[in-house]
Image: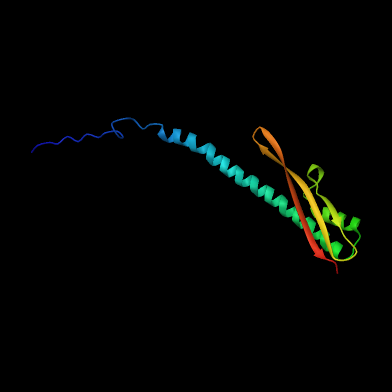
Length: 131
């Protein structure tokens, strides 16, 4: 009986593939982390915008019921308890004697981009017919 010798080749063309996974991870990981942190940052901005929109709706609801402008503005700003200090919500009211009333609320979000920080202004307004 004749013996057959089986030889194995490493990779394609006999070259070594050691460390290839580490190099691929070093290339892909920063992009993956950038994507994940971008999604988280977008979620935080979206949450802040929803809070500002809620504030505007609460304020315009009070204006529509006939409350004075100052009281409606105070209630609108109090409707955003998470946004205090530098992140505070500022609201303005437009309440003519007849017709629709409007409340506009603004705040800023400090977006940190590694080295550079930029401010993202967030605005929301709501209208409602006076009752």
